Structure formats: C-alpha cells, structure tokens
Image 1 (tube, rainbow, N blue to C red):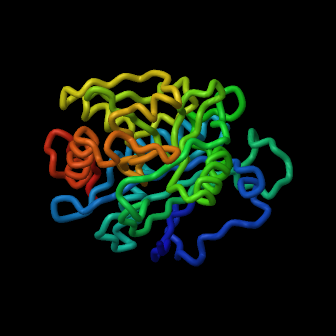
Image 2: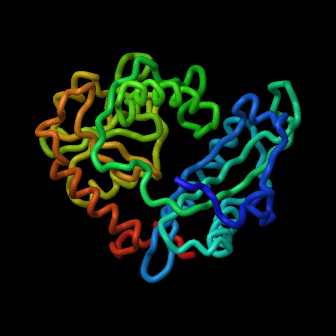
Image 3: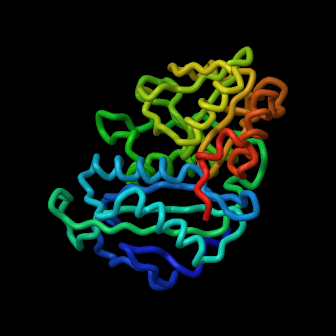
Length: 302
C-alpha cells in the first residue's frame, strides 16, 4: 500500500509531503511520547465525507491530556485543517487520515511536563486495511497492557509496541492477526481493533475494564445495533467463549467491520460470515458513505 500525498498539515502550516520531517533526536521517536488517531473518509453523496471527525479529534486531545501534551489548536480548528488538507491533496476516493501529536523536544529525558509538542495531520488514499475478507487469527501469548502501567484508554504511540509483538508472532505463524488477553486472562482486543462476539443473536464485547481502547467504530456498532434492536452486552469474555461463539468480528476505523472465521485454527460456527455480522457490515458501509439519513450527523463534508 502506497502511503503518499502532496501535502501534510504541521503545526498550522501546509507543507509538502517530502518536507514533513522531524529531527532524529525528537523525544517522541525515542520514547513513544505521542498520541494519534486513525480516521476514515469515504465518497459520500457526490463528494467526500469524513466519518466521525469531531469524535476522533476530541479523543486525540483527551489522550494528549493524559500525557500532559499541550495543544494550541481546538477540536474545531483540527477538523477544519483536516478538511482543507483533503481538498489540497485532491483526494476523492476512500482515504485514511492520521493526526499525530508528539513531544517535539530534542532531549534524552522523560519529562514532557514542561516540554514542547507538535501536531501533524497526514491523509492519503486507502481502500482496505486487510487484503482479504474474513480473517484467521490466533490468541497471542503476549498480554495486553493495562491501566496500572500504560493506560489503554489513551491512544498513545508507545502502546503499540505491545501490539507489534503480538502482530509479528501472528504473522510468523501464518495468521492474519492476533487477539490479546488482559492481565486476568480475559479477552481484550486485537492488535489494532476492538472485538465483538455474537451469541444467540446478541452482541457481546469486552468492557472498558478489560484493557481496551474505547473505539469509535466500536461505539458506532453499539449505537447501530441498538437502533436495529440487536442486544449489546459489555462484559468480560473468556478465551474458550471465543471458540464457542456463533460469530466473531473486529471493529476499527482502519479495519472497519472485519469478520473472523477462525481462532487458533478452530473454525467459528460454519467458517462463514454470520448473518448478524453481514447485516452490520452492510449498514456500516452505507452509513460511512452517507446513504443512511439518520446517521448523516456523523459525516463531515469535505
């Protein structure tokens, strides 16, 4: 997948893609001292629409507050910058948007309290995260980070070292992705996705106490499921319960809604995309493209 466009927005300025650089001694590079978001844009009603842009930018600033990173831009200003960046890059197909805020001091100490920070927004065309529809995944031997050490509720750059370990093990063993368990041995999330199971037509997803990121796509699915009168329960899920589920799927801004067909080489149900997952995938695709009137408030037009 080629990741490139004409411009990047950095600290209030539009700069050429090749000039969007930081110094090798930037604290964020050495210590993971940054926060970020993943946002999607889709063709929508003859133009381009960004899905839940304000919600993402709000979460970005909340994550920054956890690490005491100071942002001089408001949510509205960041949203406006994103829309203008998409216009300048002349993107009219499905796209990915990556805002990132990071400690920009050239330093070898860990104190970000009185330091400086920078913020950038990148955007580029992207259709799908996974090259296939329907995943074969494994349960990772690595445990998910937890709130007593590195809070998963904040979408921090350094958190994803944990995910990288799980992802490379999964890839090395022939799986598409991995599911991590929390410190209590209960299901947490994927390497970059939240997870749902379906049991007797009802959705079940790990609660916030299971070391998960409160995903915006996760929230979207829960809202839509409620509107469709599909029951939703947030609770701890055991590893064995995964294998005994009727359906399992990942959710995430990049992954969208991705069915899981097998876990640890155990087929889920009949190994095909289940009816509840298929229904949610169908309506999600319509929602993000502006084809469901009741959810148009989630779309920011470019």
